[in-house]
Image 1 (cartoon, protein in one colour):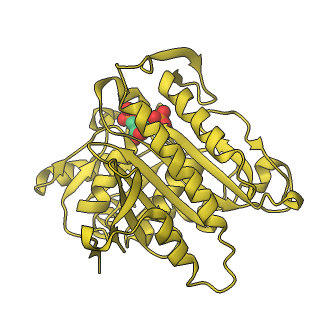
Image 2: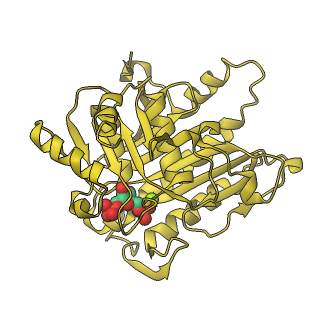
Length: 328
Ligand code: AHM
Ligand code: MG
């Protein structure tokens, strides 16, 4: 049962993590270090996002990233902030980003670098010039001893030890799971801290709302087109921001289903498995929902590359199942 927090019991992100760690004998406190760095980085990124058009942070830098996508100035700024905030954390061995072709090897395992942190520094950044909600997505994995730095982090999503996102929306919201439910924090600007507002979030069922870029309908499979036709006949509503963090956040709180299926242009899907689909899938599953791609649980996909793309179908279990019924 979701428990709501009030100002009467003010808990910061930091104290919540420390309290959670104390439940596990032998916990080393390593997460506190990683998550405090993520918290610092996202506060700094949020600050830049909120200065759009006041400072020179909007527009394209004239470069494309490894995905062949045009980089926005804020993509680059957000990436640099994360590198600066996480780069000196002693237990982070590897940092990998949507914006960098190869991951940064910070320190080897024998030097204490036990974790990889993978992130999309500013998801939905093509929306930034119209002040739409954008976000940072992150995934934390244990590094294996085997292989190159990239191979060492290519674990399935179900091996993630933590996942989360920060939505820079009308408020700045941090959603986090460490595999023990989903908690939500809101940045209280007056004290500069993420404050716990909701613990053990569960996605509500029975919300007939889908979130998909419906303009691509002719490029979707027959099954997806049939689902959309069925939804039109069955009193569905549609919400699509085009910023995954904002769309998924709405679904986490209100229910419904998010789809980014394969298209004829992107037959593997558009979204990235390791730092978009996997962390979102872990959050959604931890909140009682379902996340699949090509009929398979996203968290079970064996990755073959850091920037691998995947289709995404996630949300309330009943609404994901309603889509799957049309895909057989
Ligand atoms: P990005 O990581 O380059 O910002 O792209 C990912 C974004 C998602 O936030 C969003 O769900 C999707 O791209 C929207 O794509 P489209 O414009 O094709 O609907
Ligand atoms: Mg993205």
